[in-house]
Amino acid sequence: ITLMGVNDKLIENHKKLNDLCHSFDPTRYTAMANLFLLETSSPLLSIPDIIGYNIYYGWYVGELKDNEEFLDKLHKEHPEYRVAITEYGADASINIQSPLPERGDFSEGYQALYHEHMASIISKRPWLWGTFVWNMFDFAASGRNEAGDPGKNHKGLVSFDRKTKKDAYWLYASYWKEEKFVYISGRRYKNRVESETEIKVYSNCDEVGLYIDGSLLLKKKGSHVFVFKAPISSSHKILAISSNGERDEITINKVDTPDPSYFIPGKKVVNWFDRKDEDDDYLSLSSTLGEISRTEEGEKLVSSLMNNLQNSMAGGMGKGVKVSPEMQQMALRQPLSKILAQGGIDSESEVALNLDKALRRIKKNNEKI
Image (cartoon, rainbow, N blue to C red):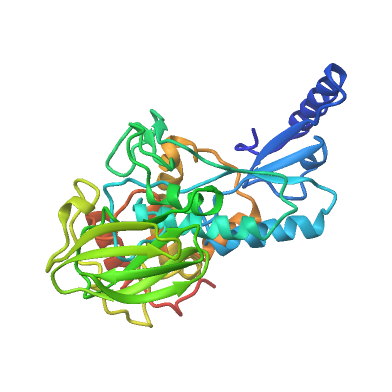
């Protein structure tokens, strides 16, 4: 309701709505969910009995750590508010795999990292009256065209056809499931280009041992997430065994070149480990939006691009959005490459490469007067 900002009429309407609800049944709480763009100083927050925030830091904007910083700041400034996280999530396609998952890449691996972070911070904040993962299943969303699979929102913990439980599903099982289990994450990332790979295991047991081709690599004590580093050179059987005797097994292969099926269809297949040499004196896609905006040429270069990205974001939901000063400052801290990825522009696309080429002609110290 606040995507386009807040005005006096909106506030007055919600006061009336709140009173109406109480007149129907004074024994029940009124509740309202607020978009994460809404300032925590807004008078809307004081109207209902309990509130929620739909927060997507680490997906649409910002970094993962911004979630707890936002929640803790709100709780400290307004301890009288009863707060929930009424939406949180990150999109992922089970077909997109990466050894270096990052925000905006729609990989199953990044969604898992996102939910690992969120589940951890939620478990440490008992003052949250509720938390709601968005969403259990991928679902139809006609305005979206993301991850090479148009017409869907991919934030589900389970695929659109309800047949495949994504890795993030099993992360929550490690918190909530009573029956003991182990689950090896990354099983759909079968063909791996790296010589040393990460093997991640989710379990509700307190110890997990990892075996490579029948030989014990390492045993680890912990909870929920167990991370191992394993050298690979060919095809390997990976076995995880919990302290309770629960088992899970996958097979992975060492390959020389990236598997094209792990990329968004139509996008250029790149080697994740290739990195462009950076010149510290000039801008690039790795520069933050703030660094670029401090130069006159850089600001002109990205202004029209950012407008186009905002209008196309989340199926057009970004068009006309009122962005708070806090959110603007957060955006300025983001590398342009991450902002482009969130808008569906691959770093190796023609648009991105031309933009990078233009930025590399602009000196960082050539700031506006």
